[in-house]
Length: 466
Image 1: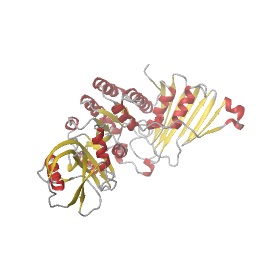
Image 2: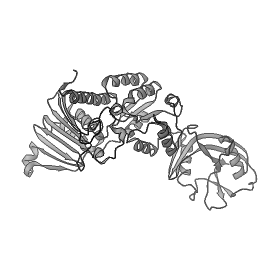
Image 3: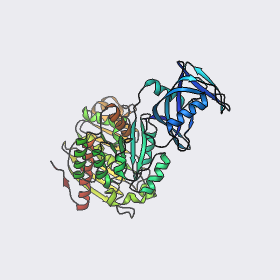
Image 4: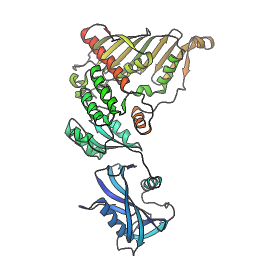
């Protein structure tokens, strides 16, 4: 069970009211006749009854309160196995208590602190903590499409955060969006512009087809909504530049999902390159593969060249591409070799070679038809070599050759992983933390992808703009 506090009036489907009641300077709790535990006065909102009316009715029926002041504090949600429910919390300052009316309540009692034997121990303490703290921090997120295969995972992540919540859903396929909204327990908004006008949307999490990114991002920025997006940012650099202009003019936070830049293993490799441990890097090889096309577990629309912009390289190959750009710097030229093992209209097996300004060459390999393939990252330099396979990493340098037989050293301690990109996005918005994967990083990945596909289509080497 997960309980979250939300800003007042931000939840549409409020079904319960809770009164945090005080009388004569003490907390007032009630005991139901069927239970031996203590709970706050409250209950369901009846048909045609407002939350405020329900709070007053429940307070009288369960405590006998005759004279009181009710102050709405916040909304809250409770995530159970059978779904999500919403309530509204009131501060109830009772001035006069009358006799306890005949009801399901057996007795009332005053406490100086929360009783130990609460009926709802996973709900009540958090609501009281909020009341006593007097403030909250909550990012209200709209989920924009369930098209991407990671959309459900992102939604689950947001729901697990104590300072973020999902308030509504939009989808370019309304039937899919309605089903997802019902699953998440939030409203479905069919009109995207109407969603952006909602006061309970601070930010959008974009999982639409890639060819829709420019339009939905620019609209979100102009509505002053923060943006998190799956990769790639857009299908071409020109579209990226339009998004960048809109985002910078609006002053909103933009983050793109580069999860492999959060890995402690890859942070260690970055450190070894920057501090000269490997000397000058000559070659880097990154291989990132799975068998999605071969085994048939990717959705059919994943192979639509119009909506995706490409196949294996555009999808899984984004990880080797953004790692190469991060580790090696600015590219100068690129070559590509893409082909198909399966009959899909986009490539399922692909390799790019990229030269960088520092004369390093990156080999970016990816495939949707390669089962049992480990994640491989190799870096070769003039003074050392790194061989990383999955979570293991070996390094051999000029210095290690002096002290270790054959020079290979297994590294088992890495820098701590960075928070997931979506967590970084939340932290940037709410707490002003650094944006590590932003507009320029998104543009750089699209620049690599756009030229990679030109190189394959035209069967030539492509030079990057200076």
